[in-house]
Amino acid sequence: METKTLTPPKSGSGSGRKSKAEPQSTTKPSDLLTPEDCLEMLKQLYLARYFDVRLIKEKRRGRLTGTLYSSHNQEAILVGSLYGLNGTDWISPIHRDMPAFFIKDLRAGWDNPDRLGMSIGEVCAQVWCRSGSPGRARDNWSHIGSKSKRIVHSTSMLAGTIPVAAGVVLADRLNGGDAVVLTYNGEGSTAQGVFHEAINFAAVHKLPVITIVENNMWAYGTPVELECPTEDVATRAAGYGIPGLIADGQDVFDVYDKVMVAVEHARAGKGPSIVECKTFRAYGHGDHDDDRAARYRTKEDVESGRSRDPIAICKIHLVNKGYLTKAEAKKYMAENKHATQTSDEDFPPDVVSYMSKGIEFALASPPPPAEEGAMWVFREEN
Image 1 (cartoon, rainbow, N blue to C red):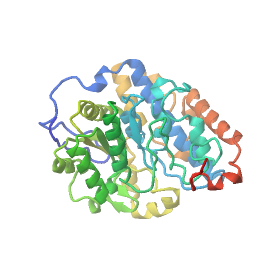
Image 2: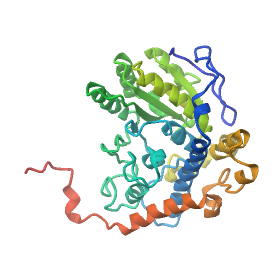
Image 3: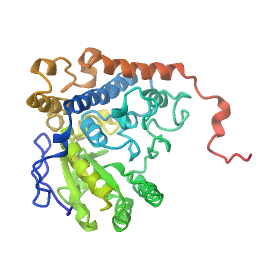
């Protein structure tokens, strides 16, 4: 597969056209999905949105502490990129990817205790700072990971997990494995030196590292045109001799297609890829930035960026395929609404119940005992 650049969708427009270098097969990976797969992907979009909405509401009620980094309007990137992975593949999320921790391997069964993804209870316990959390109530909500679940620990050092991910799959290859790793990064992280050093290393050694760039047009308060000198971040792939793909980050099926092309490329031993997903950040960088974001972004820009809701776009696809009736598509209307405008009735009941069980688990877990304060700080001698 050659390096390729696609003409991207503008904010609020359709997905980009295919480049000449893109395989000319008429069958896309998403064409092979069953109706059940497609409906499951819609439900996962609802789940990711409800997780975000519920936490925003809980935070506004004063029931949570810490900074909330919303994934609202970017759910298609997480669901679309994760759906086609094997459970034994690795992921490396960032702060805006909290749903990724429990969406990973969710296809194996939402309540399956053996699936290789965190439970909703574990993630909620992390948010509520309880002992049932992977981080034992330490650090930021999203600064968690799991070696057994094959999730690289998230940090605030954007792009800093790419070399870690490269090392993880290098070790996997040396041990005879065939796992790939998805690393998630904002477009601002591509200005970091470590981004280029790590991808260069992965390219030289043909490591199965797929770098997902969530291009939501803003790195904190810096617009994308002041972060990157090229129109598309994916064109940087040409400098490493690797594929660069561009996906419509609002279309879960387009994300799935582009990521699966990169996964197949990596699993075949051909090396890494960059997949740029064009999207838009719904709120501020974090909830501490919401008021300021209203000043550095115009109301018109925000409305345009949020005009194509991932849930609504998925429904259109499913109705066109005959997998969903128009009446069914109108049953739960979570799309195109601010978090404070939604209610539980806007989501499928099983989605609401699943999240509620996670919160109940968190609240039933006690805070960690004070004696754990030095845990993981000093080496314990036997």
